[in-house]
Image (cartoon, rainbow, N blue to C red):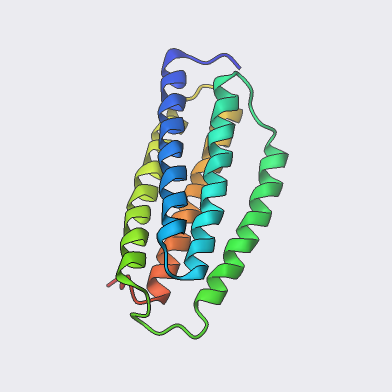
Length: 161
């Protein structure tokens, strides 16, 4: 794949965003008091590392095979869904620590931002496979946001009105 100057710049920006996400999720996993939240953050850090690698491949002119991504995502999505079910069992509203709530709020804001930057990048790419790859990553970022939102809601940390 031959990248335009703008496409290269967008991929480099996204790669920097993924670096921040990896660092934030890794640090949050270390700081979180709830073991389930630690696991969630660790899972998301691993997915962010995969995003980082995918973007590196794209910068090298390669587009990862969609089938490999889809299979990996399906397995990870099932794991996140099982974790989401476990959160809702025996949860008392307000049971989460302030530190856990702060970590979740920070990461939810980060996911909102990163998802939006992928939206812009997707519209700027000329290659449809590249757009599909970026769309796949964006969908996983949105799933991360949804997982954090569900955790927060189940633990009385977020009450949509």
